[in-house]
Image (cartoon, rainbow, N blue to C red):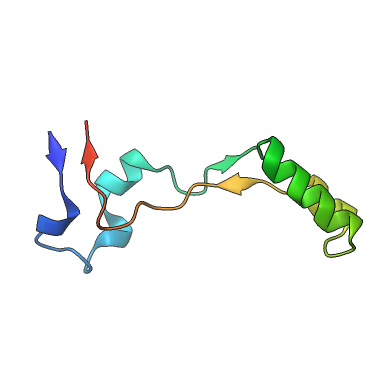
Length: 73
């Protein structure tokens, strides 16, 4: 099955409640930071750009796929 947002008849009208997007990218899915991201956040905290509490609770999140990307499954 090929899901192509470019040919969707309700593209740009109902993207926010699209079930395909809900299946492919869990909304609000928080992920742990990888080593590079953690190092960057540590540097921000050391420089005083974020508090130690903010740095310790930082997490990554998945962003919805761009409309021009096709999912194949």
